Length: 267
Image (cartoon, rainbow, N blue to C red):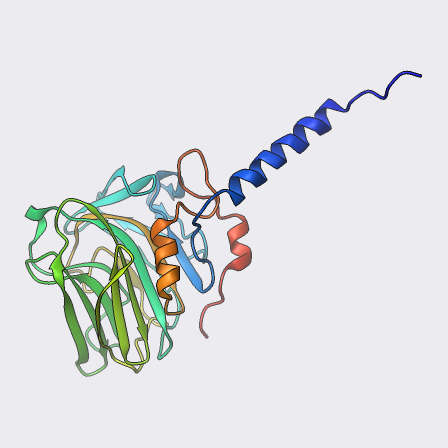
């Protein structure tokens, strides 16, 4: 009796799937998806014309000005040259009194310490509730700002200056009246924050400007992530070490299956 012929196509398909499975489980650190609301890789592959894709929440942003695409921490990043360079985002979610975390990789050079500059904000005007994450006036010190209506606010800065020409990872959290800033997975500042409404449900958000067409960033930003929870220290370290969710040849991630874990917006 002749042996059964091997189905070569089935063998190749099975082998490819096995290799893909091994590749995925072999990734030591992947992005935390629990509570992840929006994710902007700022990679060229995730930008179509002036549209920057939100690969988790579908809240795509719009590039304003001419920020330059450069090599980032992972794949590509956007290098902002000041006004009018920024990315305008739609309403992401209603933070209100609930916890939240804001995360990005950034690079600033020593000669970029000019005025107030911001990485991420949900501010549209001075009469609303909002947060701001950026840099103190004329320094590379990170500044975290939470404000409620009628100019009631809490604002403070980090001790260290990060305008050193190197990539740094920042995470800012708020839960209740406690706010924290982590740089390169290390807690560098913990201070009081506004415990009340921080808005976000009725105002647009922005990358690289303060929300009032001012405070434009001079520097590069990569891997912007927004969470509807306060990330824990071990989660921040995981994201700091992360190469994304599923590794692609470009070093960026494929989030097709990541939408399964996408968190619902606050209502």
